[in-house]
Length: 100
Image (tube, rainbow, N blue to C red; front, side, top):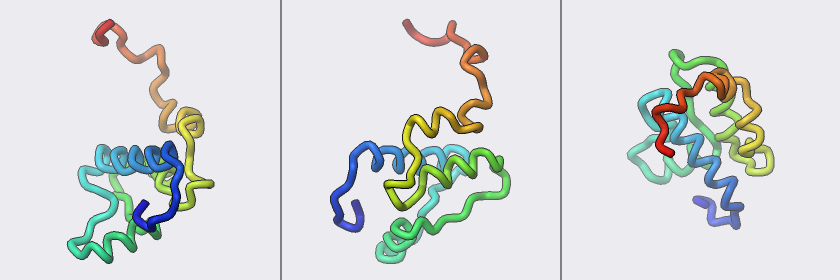
């Protein structure tokens, strides 16, 4: 979107989810710079560093989601099959706290 090229909506949404996941596990955004031009260059090149305190599994998932080439970027199906996503089995998710 930043490059002004035509984009595939679901792939752009996956990218956004990757940014949110990064922020949730690290406490800050993957791409930051006070200079907008430099910020855009970082985003377009996928230039970010993960903190050392997050697990290798979530680092791998973030890397696959924040893939700058949309053709190589993970899809929802890929995410659902990823080891980090599957660390907590569905049967362990409490259902009694969810609203009907």
